[in-house]
Length: 215
Image 1 (cartoon, rainbow, N blue to C red):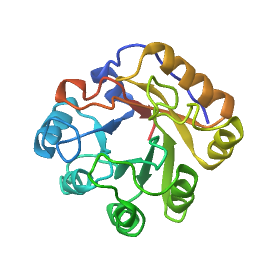
Image 2: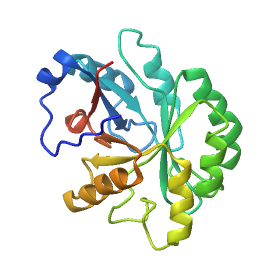
Image 3: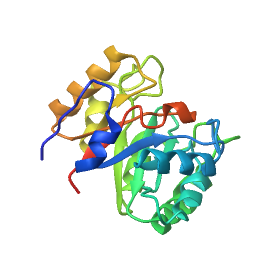
Image 4: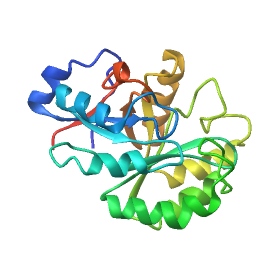
């Protein structure tokens, strides 16, 4: 595999001529985003890209956009572990996401949608491994404890988690550049997949960071 990270504004119109282009991290009103799925779908169609709606501890947005058959959407969810750190889990089809959510996330839910769930990070990843899924660490380095590279996790615990995941989010438009650089280096050093997503909460952010591939 070839991982290439470009720290520049994506030229969407140019990229879509040769690649499949997806914003892999976007939020809607079903968690802490500003927009409806219909608004997201309209903007995705205008840009000519795909999207993964990854609401916090919720799958309604991902399920809803799956009904737009003219759009490329990747079923996904961003989950807050018991420690407060996040993981992104993507699925090959929407039914698999639904089963995972019903069997793993819902029984462990906190008081509200944005609360931590009852499962610790390692156990959460191991349960996701029971499904056809791709597990990514979003913004592993960031200013808050939502990234796994924080003092709550010893180096040994971090290494065990790194062994379990498929890759890391190298660029996140909500993150500081210095943290994104550290995330990219982490991905390369682990020899894992690196992806990018806007982590957008409003339409103007959609497509600010994308992942693209020849497929």
